[in-house]
Image (cartoon, rainbow, N blue to C red; front, side, top):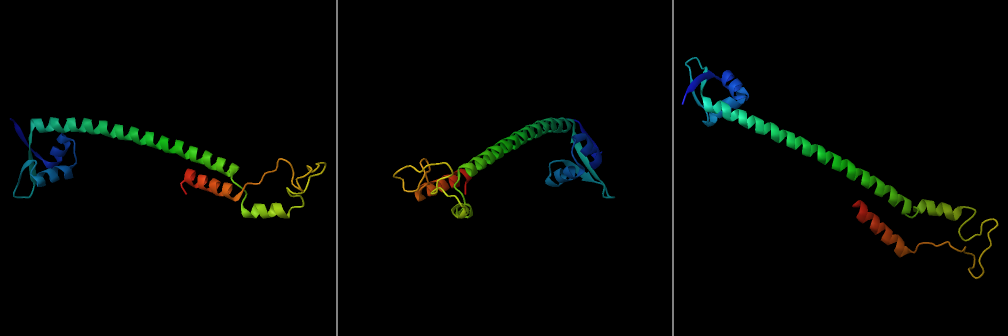
Length: 154
């Protein structure tokens, strides 16, 4: 087994890692090393050590690519679900009953559901209500609100 004595900078270049990563490996005892009296740190590298880090780098690149692809997929999925939620919200607005402000305005308007419109004849026996006009009952409104809360997660 052949070993080479190199500086921290050279070891980082050969291993394909940062100088701080080399120093951490020295600190953890993963790399053999020695210090000169002037304080300069030298690392001993085996020729097999250099090849192992390159393999690790290629698997790292593959892992990064896979995570980027998964990230992109999740972004598209979030956009799709946002679109679905927007469509559901619009649909709920279309089928939801009028707010209390809107219903009070309808009662104050000159023509209500109880009054026949121009040219319309009240149906005999309905006592002022028009045929085909149905008002939702209180229970129906509550169940619609419950459905909205379940669909929108409120």
